[in-house]
Length: 477
Image (cartoon, rainbow, N blue to C red; front, top):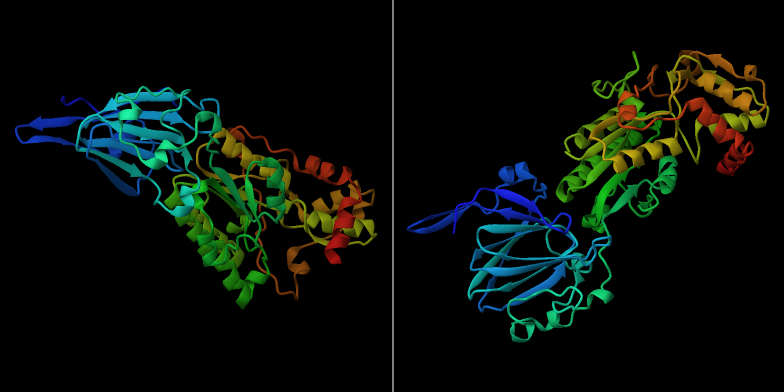
């Protein structure tokens, strides 16, 4: 047994890796580092986060186990003896049915990704087989196992000891042939807050995702977290939030804002870390005081009110994750109640509104925001914070309102611009950033070009001029 150097080789099955382990021999026996995270990751092994160590003792040569594909990753090795290992790709995809086999002793380990069937046959008596897994076993997860009969003719595994002479469990003898195997599906994307403006737009941008509204997952309910089998997902998009800016300044609203936007997001961050999920957190321009702009991704938060403070706290928790995207946006317009719909409704009824003219920003249309989020995931952009709004010059709320009136065929002068201090005089209102413009350099550098805000506004209204008015009437009903 030689003391080979650490090394990793790719096999014909994507993600199935063979690891060479140095074994140090002397007169007392031998020693090896079976799992050394830092060294192995530096060589290219995924940082898969093992949580459980299992050991199988096999009394006889010819003991055969598998083929089992499990909904987690495994790192398998031999402590004593030798085995013949067999792996078959049982994942949904072009390599379904691909086979790889090799002998393993203490000097070799194999990384088995989720969905690849794993089996072995002992070549010596009293063989000890060890494996690390990155999920705790539970009965619900076992429902996702995919099994293959070890004697399947199409896989044609060349077992050194014929299966008729081998030791198998009764269960393994009756697993299905490859033609009857239902492939393991990839982990899915889970979208929380599916009933909001962004959540509705994400249904189009991420059609393969699973969507949960508040009735199916209430972020503020600690018990809700235990109802989700998190290992079934690769990514969580948190589009849920407490967004009542003025309500957050009240005693009850303050508690709700912090519970949903900070405490619950911190809990979601813990879940993401535990299950190695990508977490996408939707943030807001309200994390800044708006004293100047445009605001960059690296600018420290400086929120004025409770809503912005609670969102900034949630963002800080998410930023501790290695795999995260904080998507910061502003002035969202989508399917549901929003400023543009309100202005269109007023224009349709020939009502002249008074609108703030000294708060500046850019509109963010939910469809474009959802497209940007999908782009970050599909392009595997570097993790971190991205500002994401529509592009174009900064505008005031009054300028947006005037443009809505123009597009609705009304006179823009029907909109009366006033300073925020005058508009909110005598009202219980939260402080708002005067400058909400977000710099878009990083999202553009990632390969996504946000459409111009006023062009998107045109499309939003002109495509169906009566849509906003009718929606507003329905909202009032």
